Amino acid sequence: MSDTGRQSFTDKAGAALKPDSEKSTTEHLGDMFKGKTDSAASTAQPQSEKSTGQKMGDTFSSNSNEDSTSITQKAKNALGMGETR
Image (cartoon, rainbow, N blue to C red; front, side):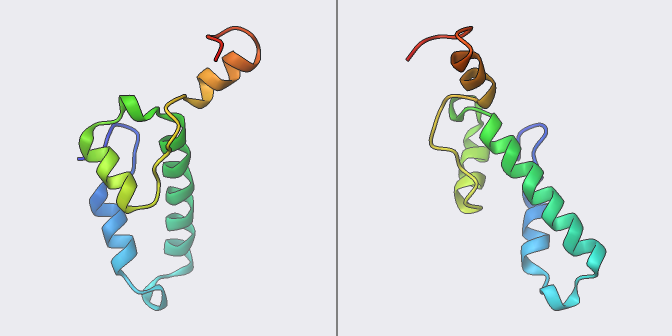
């Protein structure tokens, strides 16, 4: 099961298994948009907050972020409002 705010695994599998030649332009654009938003959500969510299932799904979809610091935390750190590393 995917985490809240993430593309479901069945949607990802369905998009990957359907040949591009059978997809409409709308389906191509939808797949691209969903992929970009899911990738952004993967990057924004620290690994430590992901469920085991989501970590496995991200690994298989090449969507894992190896850094455990979220984008929000990185921004806070850069502005001197977060923890220093």
